[in-house]
Length: 113
Length: 113
Image (tube, each protein chain N blue to C red):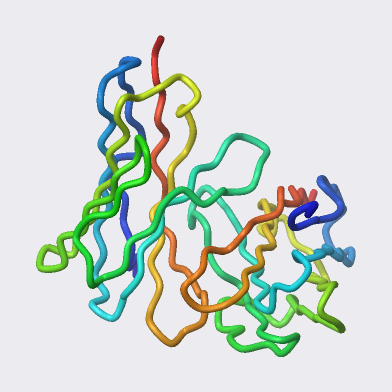
């Protein structure tokens, strides 16, 4: 039972344009959501997060939007840069569970120069 | 800080052999997590510790898997006996507590032949 899903396995975007990555979840107990970025042969690195009490969080070129009623979140990268080419994972946490994260399957982003 | 350190980076072993993966978390972090990444199941949590105590091992696939954390600076994940289906990348991560992100090591790529 996949509680966190990223339905797009890959995304290709032109440099300078917007990248939009989507993530859906099923467990209404999730109260904190994170995005991680992963380069080949490296571990995932934290990118940005959002609490369930918010609907938007912004950090530089990265913005995460949360729609609790739809159980959907998205990551916007604008403008996209070639160095953003990586696999992006959406993750979610249930309150009171420590930092136990449930990850989506990942979306591979390719930013073309 | 050097970050989360995992060893070895690569391990190739024969079916039936014992395999031990090692992790040194970031100093001061009181949560430690072991994840496994496969093509079929993505990133899945195997077990996590808080203050060296195992909190949730529900993700450990079988009794062949065991994990220990003898002190705050060291953890092991052992597979005995190993099987080809255990081939995956195993990540260790650590964090300071609730509400903060987890920092991942570079992973150990395990191949069981």
